[in-house]
Length: 359
Image (tube, rainbow, N blue to C red; front, side, top):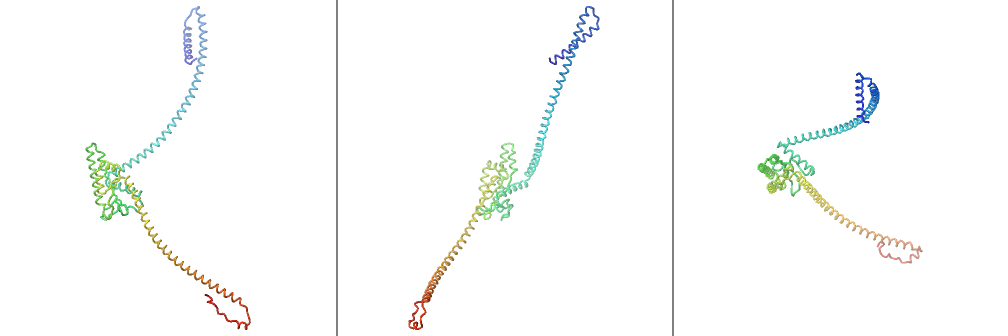
């Protein structure tokens, strides 16, 4: 039996009790006493069943409430755990977001500082010179370059590469035509873009002429110089859109280079310097070898003289040994002579020695 059916029975029982109470208050005939008595009995039985039903309903509702309470408690506990995990994850993400915001703020400050630098012509020139110095220092030894070098004509160049002749010292000057390039990038239409491109061409051409006049000095520097453009975008725009300007720079022996190209040029310069040092070292080695060969020839002469002395000494030793053998032989002969009488001695003719004793 479901809870709904039990509730329905309870309601019916209550209605029956109400009907019974209403009928008992009314006057009835004797014929209705039996029926009323039977009805009272049925109502009493129904009241008992209703009480039992209410007890069962109360018991089942208590059990249901207990189960619901347990499930609700477990559900709340699980929900609390999930909420805590989500809050922990959100806190970690907020920390990451906070750090990212700090980095973005720092980056924004650097961008603002860079914009302030680039907006000032003098500061922009210093920016190009600093970038040039960093590239040169990374690629070449300290003895191979000089910054802000003063030439024989009194002009000061941003960087002077000390290369042996040929080709000789190479001048590098940094120029940054940012204003002309910005006008080109911000041009709203083709006509404005063409005008801005012509302005960029005129500015860069002026820089090329200035470098050719100031930093290419016969007998002091190489026959060419380098125009350093600190921006790859500016360098690409000139090489792609302004080919006549590139040809003009080559005729003037002023070669343009962006950061990447300049690094390649500097590595080539380093190889040239290494070969020059090797050639110089080879010359020193050749000189030392020549001196050593002279010492070897002198030693050979002295060894020959010493060998001659040794040959003469060997001959002298052989003569000495011959004389020693003769002396020994004479001694042996003297030792073999027996002692005789003086008379016999007088009869014996004196023998004259044959040859020199040491001969």
